[in-house]
Amino acid sequence: MIKAVRWILGKLILAYEWAFKPRKGPQRSEQEQQRVARETAGLSLYQLPACPFCVKVRFTESRLGLDIEKRNVKSNPQYMEELVQQGGVYKVPCLRIPREGEEDRWLYESSDIVDYLKRHYSISSQTNP
Ligand SMILES: N[C@@H](CCC(=O)N[C@@H](CS)C(=O)NCC(=O)O)C(=O)O
Image (cartoon, rainbow, N blue to C red; front, top):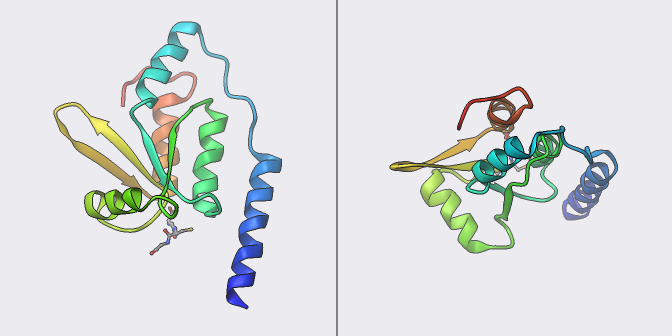
């Protein structure tokens, strides 16, 4: 019974995302778009397709016109292991942020991830991550 409810909820969440996810990002200059693409190429989002907190992050990603690699922790045991061993806890979403000369940063909490993405990739942003 619980499994069935979870299954239905998962489908509803996916349908919601399909219906309402922003389809278009902001207009950027060619140069700015290249900078954003370069910087986001190193990011990865550990996540699950039907997790509402992950949907929230994916909405922000779309709204900002970003393309971040998704790592499904249920379908790939290696991603799950990386998340738990290196991130420290099993919770999604988690944004993995590479840092030059330092260990990767593992950013948990959907609101913190959304803030991070907005801070670095909103159209007026000039800062580097
Ligand atoms: N406050 C967190 C909640 C994240 C959360 O509860 N994620 C669930 C999946 S929807 C999870 O990872 N649960 C596993 C666990 O807590 O052990 C956020 O906003 O990111």
